[in-house]
Image (cartoon, rainbow, N blue to C red; front, side, top):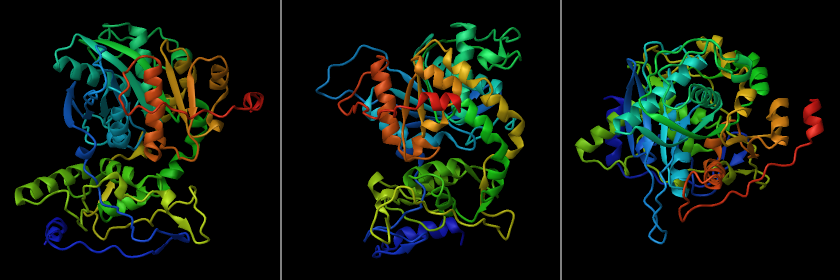
Length: 467
């Protein structure tokens, strides 16, 4: 009997009662009656639809979250609903935005499109390892244009590009291309005369993308990526990649490891399946989940009641996961800075069993500098409202420090979270982005709108500039 079949049979058994308080690694204790759940959550819990978009012989997976219907007590708005295009970081997938997408659509009237970038998630291209900034930005423009053209549009709704880490750099490169080529001229994208230092665009002609829709780019938001600190960090990136587990015996085990990297277990449960692939089939874990759910539906099982031990799939409500803040140190004091240590590397007995990373990022090293070189200046000269969201004020480089002093962009700092800010604190990131959208009249607030009160601490400008 396969592990999937065992998982399905387990649905017929009564649920295992939760135990009492139990000790876990690092001297932590969990609250009585609660235990951590590492079972994956399907993408459909957070997104309304998924599409495979064909662009120049390549297939790009996108996840779509539709705009919520206006509340009864709110007057209908005649303003067009903006489209938030979400771009993930290197090694992540579009599902990294799941919790954020749910939160932001509750706060403002907007549509969300999260894209699996080339080489990631369920996107398949003719060259998955070509992660040059030029190629990635052309991909993004092609996906946006194709989606809008399929809907019969000739002029797009307001578009806001939002990117994290590598995706933040791609957002800036994409915005620069749109600005430099002008509206409606994206089919003529030659960059022989572009100043690389000022725009961060490579001097390579791009002929892949032919835009049929005038793209109405209104704003750019970048999450936790700064040229100076990113370039400095590249030297240790290969070592970091080697230190990661390379294989996982099961999906829950992979989520367990991932929960040592992000501080929100629920986010790990929905995002990790898009980052790993089944070694025997080569397909991402999201496909395994979809197949299992389909089989459950045929058997008449309810996915909301299904609890498994093999693949470990479960529908979950947000309150079911235990946050790091709910764990206690033995001395009774709560801590937000103590996290579960990732499990040891798994070495499968068979090379054809278990899960492995979807993309081998180590093989893309030659493209890393191109993501970030000239990024700060390119970001600063974009002629539209800009938002920079950081996990720490120390991440600012000199160019952005001066730009912030000159009021060239809005900055927010969210402390006590890691690099994957939007996964660690999706609601806080949503508050900041929603406030940004409403402030610039890009989006209409809903009854759930919570104006962000998060303020960036006042930096010691002279110290940062000298540094």
